[in-house]
Image (cartoon, rainbow, N blue to C red; front, side, top):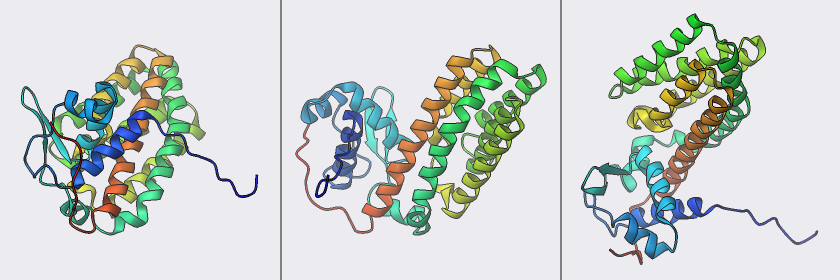
Length: 250
């Protein structure tokens, strides 16, 4: 209908993430200081603690906050304008490309994981596990971690026993690898794609559980998309020092 535009639907978690991101960038909480508790944030935003917890996971993955067991969640030194400088201006150019690549990966790799669970040989399962163990041994070495991460996904594509799917997965991962190389991604946490889910995906494939493998791969790439979308918007929003105040108080 002329004159009207579609209203985009956003989830409670997405709205919570946006609010918390703006709250952090407002400068109300100083670098290194503790954020209000999950309960306090949930009450202030009028949402459940689950939505706050999931949003904080994304913010932790991009390095804005740090969760400390028994102490709470703290702002890191990457917050604010410094975050944009770390990533570099090239991210503004590549941001949309990353989201599209992740969207394409979701379309293809979910089915690749399912097929791998049904068709992988013992040798292929060992190759996937080798990349997984390499990732786990290099959590503090970003480049080594990412190489193993990309190979982990390539191996799953190969284990689908479908040459076209395998080539698609390999090409998509190659493109993502090139984009991240251009965006100075060394400064981002190695586990930004949710390192724990790699183990769960491997376990499902190794046990032949196709449905679980596909569902876990979907969740894994969805989390990646949320992380990178947050990184992209932060890069655009932190060109100047944060100012203003937030209504959230502990």
